[in-house]
Image (cartoon, rainbow over all chains, first blue to last red; front, top):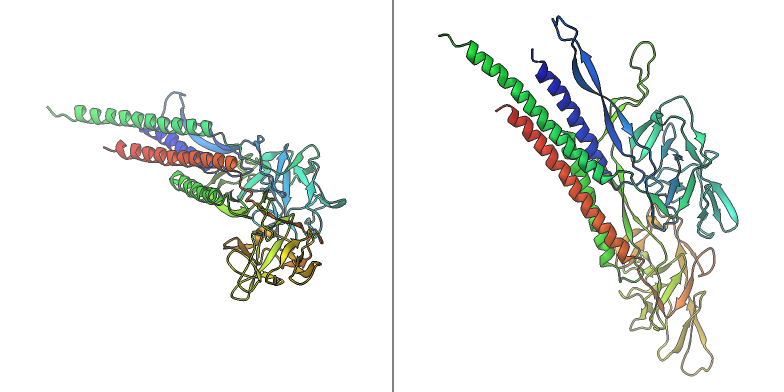
Length: 244
Length: 262
């Protein structure tokens, strides 16, 4: 009998979760390599208890998070170790356990001369080993295919890989993804590396603010609906409860 | 409601961003200054439904999962060691470094610091010092009355001393390089110190081992680009506003819930 309340509640729960997702998108609007996310919802039809007809009640459930891997804008920084990816590939990073994958190309070098990410994890070559830069040689030039050259000498080739199914990737924070499927990545030969560029987050602020307004209005509407359905009971109880 | 704290992390990050940008703008005319950049990373994700987990006994797999992020954090403040442009000063004791390398400076504590600010001068005993008065290493003394001081590209300092018609050799300036110069620790006053991340200093003559050369009569301007800093400032301010909007929205939604039971 309280179906209107419960359906409303199911909508409010998903709206709150959606607000969390939108808040995370907006907070990361300036995070290099960040990919925008949105909450997916679905109907969950339920037959009410004791119903004599087949009309079902449609609850709302959140059933997943869609990640839009569209290319972010490449921003010029002029940094030697700032690398932007153009295409659907990922850099490979050596982390404890399995390798991680990232599109955040704000690299640097550590005290051993290894090419590392902003968190200090080594970036891997196409052969799966760290890339070592010699500080006594000229500044490295990184080609579109990832070849790292110091003067005339090639010191390594940055490996870029792609995934057949991007839904196999799980976010780790820090711009890292991990592969949770059994299917390994393939070399991404058509993805180009741009030296001196960074891939900006692909969050579109206007879309996110619009979504914010929609979420907040929908929440109010559902609250009104729950209010109304509550007052129906109030009235019924008051009228039917009158003795004389 | 997670959105409140998520938006708060976003506001804190933009605050730091504005601090870094304002420091860049404030140091636009500081000799040898290198601009800095705040780098942000997304925070940990909470798995509400893990990607690839089985959703029933027949082996159906969750295709996308449900991971909700908890905001943003400042990863690091990265120093962009791009070459600054050369400003002509015509002062014979000004040297600019063209390319990689740092001048070595002896601090009063006896430790060695490194600088790219080559606006040098001499102290009362004729020693070549930085503008704070700290001697440059290896120490070079310029005799009183010396004229025609020349500093060559490779760092050789020579001058004509009274009583001699040919220039005499006064010493050799050296430069230090680091595997990871972005890892140097800032001391202020344009001085930098070796840290665990920078690696040890490799000292050599200018022009050798990939080091830059010296240019007398010039100083290296800061590499801050006013236009891009102001653009960054605008975008940081807008990002801050957007995050505060999220807080307002979350607050309104909470208020709606509270009012329901009235």
